[in-house]
Length: 343
Image (cartoon, rainbow, N blue to C red):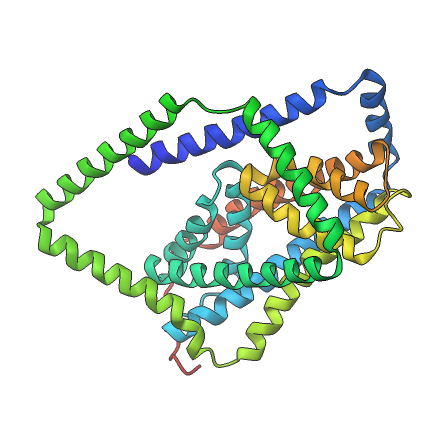
């Protein structure tokens, strides 16, 4: 029950902020600006709108292959099919319930491949650590080669975020109410579990699950093909970069942007996606600010962000729904696929 309430609160808050940002931003636009953006969207080259979404799906393939590499040292060899669609479902659910998707993809493999949740979550945590390191490398490149633009953008985005946060600030009463409500639910849940199975048994179960997560996190040391892991990681981030750079060609005004601008978009899009579900509201604004810095003015700057976000979100929604249906059809019964740690 605690998880459902906490998830609902997070969804309501993040969706509310995202929708509020959209409403606030559109409300500040004149009728002429709105008409111009509609005209921009109509004149976009949709070959370059669709291609980034295709590249995004390819990145999910590399992510699923990298995940399989981490699971093999633990004695599990999930099928590429189930792993790929679990990753697709992860991004689909993250649009509605931020961070729930990561746990859900572990649940898919637990259901269909009998991979224990604690070990799957451990490998997922390791993946996120690696991704944070990769993002750190990109930020270091930007700070080194685009220092003036990077810090100017950071200041402008921080100012914009503060302005929006002030407009849609949540009251302290509500936040404290949610906090204490969650505490009460946690205490009640623990009391129920202790009464049902005993304190010592609950502690032993917690230790076992914690050890499973730790084994998942350190599984990287037993990977038989470390260079394959590096290859998949590089390809994931190469796809992310390509999505931004290829998308520049959707408008003549953005077609001549330099490749480094795509790295800037990649870095700040991570911020947008972390603040609202799927970057709702923030992603187009951040992209507008970035292409402005690189010399793109007028409505095309915002239109680029709007079209990019809409295409990516649509592909994630369609891909997620298809993945849920296909998994249900082709996985009638759970199957256990284990290999030796050396395979």
